[in-house]
Amino acid sequence: MREVPMVTGPVQQPSVVAQARVAHPAGLPADPHSIGLPGVPRPAGLAGDVHALGRAVAVASTEPCWREEVLLRLRPVRHGFAEHVRVTEGPTGLYRELLSQSPRLDHGVRLLTREHVAIVAAILAVQQIAERPETRPDELRHRAGHLLRRLARHRRRGADLLWEAYQTDLGGET
Image 1: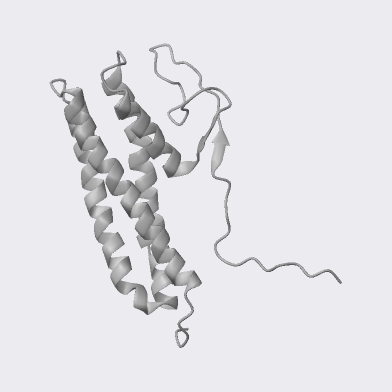
Image 2: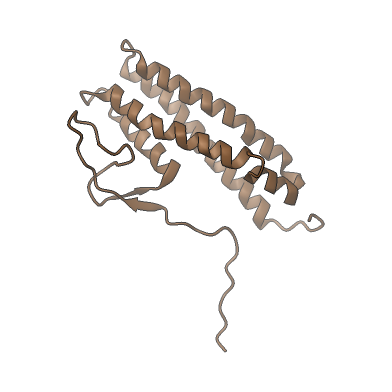
């Protein structure tokens, strides 16, 4: 009988989705999730939305409708992050499950929960500054860069917490 290696850890999901870019009559993409060239893969979900926002911010002021593009790309980030908060903090959320299995992770869960509040505030700050007609592109890039760094740091901390929860075997906790 052939031995099959055992796979442990979280299930890996596909990390890219190919989507074609379709032009909108006003020069903006018709699909707020599409970025890049037709057929070129992009990260899926919130990560893809954050990537698209970063690209829109990077070209701010070089495109005619740069404010609208940033606001268009910010909307799915705002919605995706709200869904992330609901899935993690909700009554049957990931954090409650983590704490029931590994109470030692309480500090990390509290830190991530506090970051949620700060990230929501940063998203709103970028939206407000992008909506102001007198905002300079460099000011918007600065504020959006702050948001993008916070999101990247939060994602890294969340991944580290999951790694610690499911890969560390300290024994005695069940």
